[in-house]
Length: 76
Picture 1 (cartoon, rainbow, N blue to C red):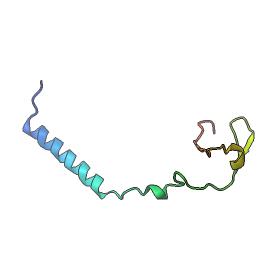
Picture 2: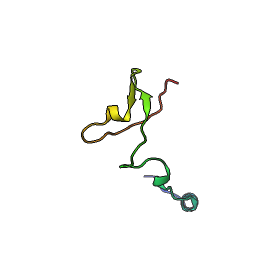
Picture 3: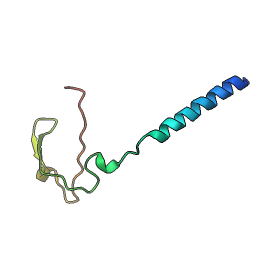
Picture 4: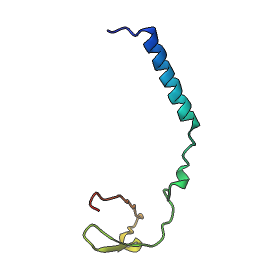
């Protein structure tokens, strides 16, 4: 196993302390500000599915509700 000299150890400690300082300066992320949350009522919409068929909230709603997943396509 390779020994770590004092200079290397001091450098690693300096890097770690700088990283912790930068992390402490960040503002906390407020998840509620990022968009709709679990359980929120969504407005009615009309969007095409992957095969071009139009869907709205009523057409996808099942007996237990619906889960909507939006993602960006790589085919723009």
